Length: 348
Image 1 (cartoon, rainbow, N blue to C red):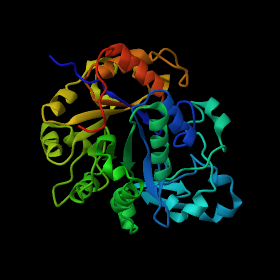
Image 2: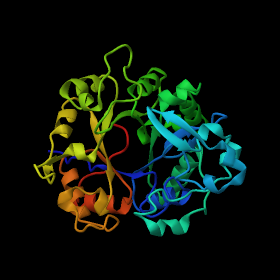
Image 3: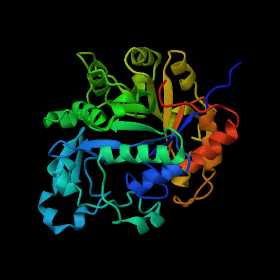
């Protein structure tokens, strides 16, 4: 029998276990640590530039709150049904945002990363893609990009079509001609439908939270459907006709006992594979506060627990790709579990 390909190791916003997320150094380090691909999240500026941020509210990831010239921009908005107070990318031009610096989002868990605060400017999507190209040439291997479209329905309500902006950016950077290296993902199936209908040359992956429903439900006149429904057999059947893969929270790949302790993998990957879908999972982190109870080694949330045990159990599910904050740890556990497996690309 042919060997199964090893799962992709995807640097979740770069290598944010070691540097502030979405910074240039975070992306470069992810590549150097062996990631197969990196994952930028994209939101829009007032003038329609795609910038790379975890959310469109940026007070926790930049120095905007310290900038007196932007104090009047602080406001409160409802995004995807949740109320947020702070500063939002759509209220700034790119010229304004380009003056801001990155900061560590998980400062209490990763206090050492604060040493890198305020050293680097925030990035556009095209800047990240240029880093991937630069690192591919330097390292002699073809690296991929997994672009997450954030809050598509919300931005559409403001008059911004993130899908169209993304396709234009991909064309401008030459990444529209690299489908084997490109994945586009979203928590909103409607956004992926429109990208498919527009001829996007990339693998399309539907993101599914553990709880709740997508912000754009109901889609195309169908009844409103929860993320849990999309993980059902009926949901996977529908996804198989619309996208190339599904990306789920790691908790959906771990069976737990009555005490909440992981006891083995679920059958979700096998059910998705039977329908031709690839499966990714997020986010593998070594700190105790993010590990399943079985793998926690102390009550200190920022201390590393038995990450090898949890990462290994996740990989035993047969998953096709893992999002990690520490790419070197992802590579280490993948190579330990699959020492002779061939590497795969981003495309299905």
